[in-house]
Image (cartoon, rainbow, N blue to C red; front, side, top):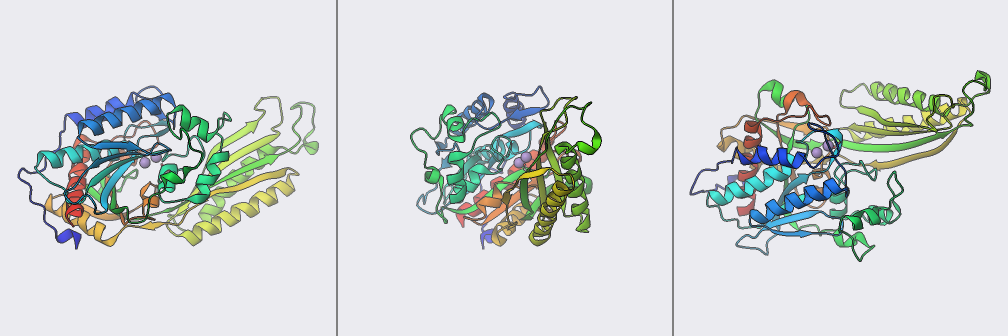
Length: 428
Ligand code: GLV
Ligand code: MN
Ligand code: MN
């Protein structure tokens, strides 16, 4: 098995504890929100600057860099058997509005440092090692998360849909991609698809985004499965009108329908009876959005997840039924109920779990098996390659907010486990 492979290094692995935190801070300055908050949205100027920063570091690490039509960035260290399927690692550098510096970034900058550390230790890869910085792991701009990895995994439906997709400003996906230097002379995004078997393994390093590792004082989380995410867009439409003149019995307020649906989402989640079922209404917009105007349109976006796919699907059905009932009772029109994505969960590869466990043991780092409640590009890479994830503790489990933090020591531990895992997988 992979894990029985022992890696002999002329110099023990050492992580550069000065440079990596500095790079994390530097990358965080490419942001549309003030420090310590980070906002870095797909194909914006700040995203393009972040991409340039990553490509430069990949070049300095001696990697050959390429980008595909949607801007997934690849940095490759050729192995001595370069025709074998490579071992890949990576994460994302886009950041949702007012988030932190570590989500995704640790898995990209950390991967570059892992490669540098392997070089310093005299390691020679057998299979090539490839770092991927994925395009739009976050759904911020075009409403769909893991856009880059979904396409890499060959999502034909998405590739087609993107030709007609626009953002909140009515800018098309292709125009936005072109303004960032991608998709230059092609509308057909199928060039992004990778063949199954391109990689023998994919490993992602990420902050836990939950409190378990920190609370239990464990250095490394080894992910065995990623929970199943889904998201839904809903629009209600009523008649609107004057907030003073239209009497209550005459109203059909789209905003109140939305408010009622938001509460119904919470109720349906709680009815599942499992703490693993979660649901969030993170977007709720009223139109025209004036204090003295009855909301004529309301737009909600609902995020729901569970490690149990069937249970999550039951929640989605209940939400749909409630949306219909609320529309009827409030005499508004349910003009849209669109399930944007409804993905199955993914299991980590057995041999990759083993490799990560053995690497942690060899590095004398405490570790535990756990599930990922957040989604990651690994969820989609699992469709074309055996996959595994390495979690590190983060302060109070905070994520998707500016208070997100991971210590230099915890990051260095994660990078070491990543480096040794990549080395094992490269030789196997
Ligand atoms: C990823 O950012 C997620 O929302 O899980
Ligand atoms: Mn995130
Ligand atoms: Mn992330």
